[in-house]
Length: 313
Image (tube, rainbow, N blue to C red; front, side, top):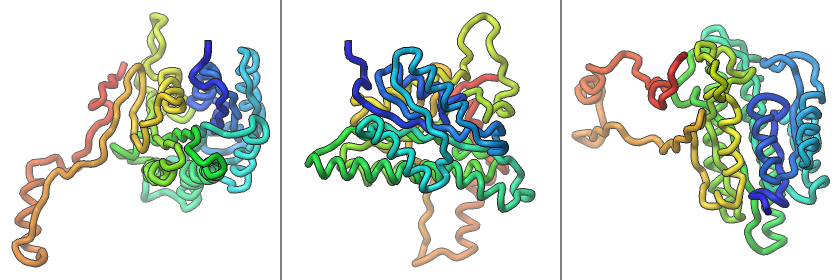
């Protein structure tokens, strides 16, 4: 019996732990050969010595289950190391079909206290890291498409966060990077569609090393049920988006957790005001816009956990 990803090869970044590990295992379960990438630093802030152990352990887990996997110790925020990662997949498996970008770090701080390095490091790993791997994968797919004279199977699944949707007061760097990843994804989706490549983005909720503080108040079930915040709830959507079945799903944003998938629409216009004359003046804007906000909370934002039904334990 054939599997959905038989004959496909995949890269998963940040795959030594948490979400990336679950995604790598799921792609392998669906038949893909996997390059397991992880820089292997022990600190979620990117601190500590790099280690090949996390990536190697996940690769061995895949091989022990009968799949194909190789480990890659590399920093995706480094342009040349990202190039080498894509080349490893092509050299090992003959081609690359799937790219799942998941690598990231946290350097949390309020905006008035954040250092330049805390800003730059998070933007570099998340946003530049997603760009680096995407750039070389895209070049590979474009070349293959031109050589074959038709579309190829190319799939990109990027990882954003609801921090960019709802705001996150102590994470201006992280929220900005995750918003940038959405823009990168939609641009990539438009640019690569002609080659048969899709690019989509997920906002996962999962209990991992990265989110241990965020979900500290959400209790794990004690009755043997799978935790609603287990990374294993996210991985099947990644497997689907990587498959031929998702050929028409492109440039989309998904929120996923605990047996729930939500498709997020592009922003809609909430209100519209037209100038009485050629252009607005201060007084006219005050008369039109101030009443619109008069009865709204001073810092109105939506609580994503409440909107999408996540309840604290």
